[in-house]
Length: 199
Image (cartoon, rainbow, N blue to C red; front, side, top):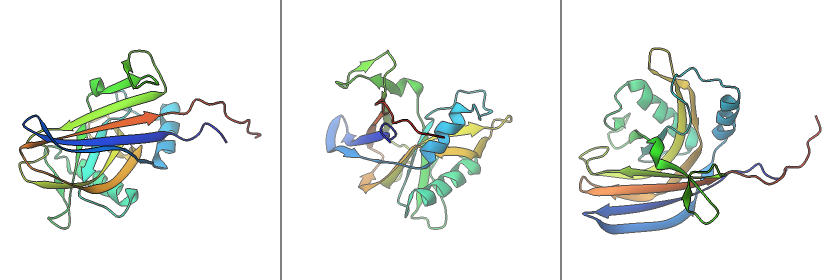
């Protein structure tokens, strides 16, 4: 069936003192099965949070075998209640963290890639991990995912309703306290006419 596949690309730029150290260029990223469940939950209005649920966080970590394992680790992070620093589990070498995405850092773009106010089928999400973020320690970044998550009436996270949109297992990026990592993602949602499906 035409018109069912969301497409995603991303670009990482590592800098220090205003100078670019690494520009990885644009690369494709995998849209995961969780995205379909997330979309269905949004359509059903199956979220109880008073906040509007959408793309809420970017989770990062030092490497998992797949998106399911990473999601399990991100779940542990949110359930820990300590969101101000990397969450380490099992081995001290492994860490995971999630940064809240400011709504102003999610933009509509047109076919030429220009940011516009009109609703389009393309979103650009830009997230910067600043100096000392998420830690003063040097950290090895090897993976990331965009996610949406619900909250319970008491304000705690409902990880039963946490959904990944994408997942990327990328090459090693070592970031120390003097560096900034800017990650830009472009998501393109299909608008082609879909084939008729009989019930």
